[in-house]
Image 1: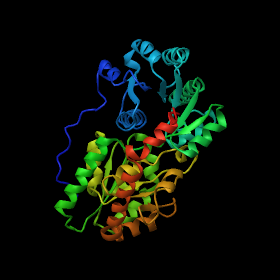
Image 2: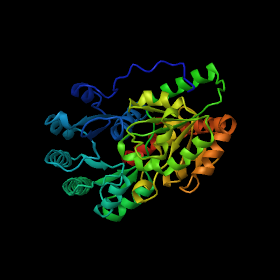
Image 3: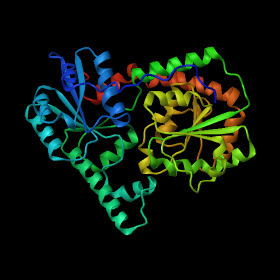
Image 4: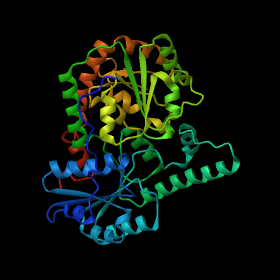
Length: 395
């Protein structure tokens, strides 16, 4: 592994602030935007609430924003009376969220719902369950599973129907949303936060300064957030196994909840480094230590609504991705320039090409991907999209 000579960050969630501190972020003058999420996390909340709020605070004069969550309780009912925009982010229907949205609207606050996934159309629940490998063999477990998924989709849909407008992450998801909802739909893409960019740049500069001596090993990485990505990795697992059988210099890093039971990769565990899920900044270090990042993804309506965050997370540390050509990945990656795209029947050929060229083309693609990510997925690059998506432009 090409270790990067940068100490892991002394990590603490930057959004972990008291209610009073978060309330003070909303200035008395100008436009005030409040984000509401059930419980802060490093995935949806970070991209859709924290990053957008910080971009507004730092880059848009006359606008202030902050984030709040379910644990803030009844104090939120007073707060939303005095904000201009309330953004409810991917919250299933409940009495609390319905009351919050009702009070906000009664006091003239615009109420938006932000959804970053295709999780509101009951017609695709079977497709999603299959995609995420949620099937249960036991009838009782299956009954619970179906009840959970149908209820979750219906509750998210109900929250969306209470909103004045809906925000999603890309045009493909926007089109699916317009098929089932009457509300206006706007697009705010996912993008990186300042902390992620700063630490990633530190990693890139340290790696460049230390040089990259070639020990003959090729390091590939797959970075998964949840156990639901097992079926995605399986798309490339056969090709990866064949590559590792042919070429003993190839090693694989797996990060997150992944089960290799029954996988063709199971015979190569001595060349597979598995790391538990970690915080999002340390994840950048783990990505920076591989030569290429792999992003296989199934091809269906649900997965084509996914964002390109796996691409720009890797690109932020100058690591190129080999990805499935989903809607957003095809739009983000210029094949052979900032990364490689591989259809399901092309993984053998594309992986072989990537490994052969990783010392030259791979490094160049990583550098160009880095330049593209900073130019296209930074707060400065996206803040106008945030303002437009929230309907703040021209106010």
